[in-house]
Length: 230
Image 1 (cartoon, one colour):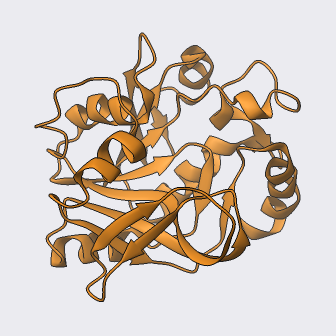
Image 2 (cartoon, one colour):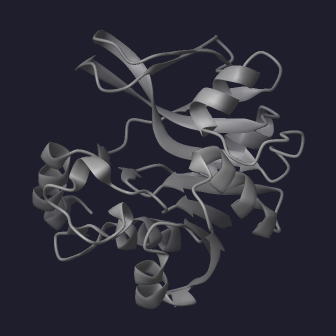
């Protein structure tokens, strides 16, 4: 199993509580948030992870080096911001297997990666998104899909009584971006929404623990909960 972690974020909304480090290095319950993502990958048998880094990349590279537990680490470096899609396009060039697990560096979602890969292969998908049902929220957009779990539409964030959100865990084919000419683009807005009718994007339903540390309130929540949940 190979993985890519998007770890190049500035963490603008966290500046009030986390200073001078990239967002995935924000300390949570005594260690960098990125450590929890790597622990999750290690527990599930990942042997190679590519960290897509940019902002203050040296902090991540110096801390983790070339190995973490049973995982060999490589780095895909953005010399200038490529946004999430461009960062992924570049990082996937280092993947040797047919598919890769992709994680957002500021989100933890308790997903069984092997089951998700099996689902991805069985549905012959180009990309599979782990989705979680939430109630009474406005912070996230929603994902709509048919009875075969093929995604049919992405809906922009708005007040929502109930809906499925993109949980920030993907299974992507290594060659997913081969026909995308631009090098700087957003994965959701510029790729998923654009190609939803022409490529096979599937929704993998998961009810596992989910948290996004991108805002101070949830960052503080993670600091309390990770001591017992992760």
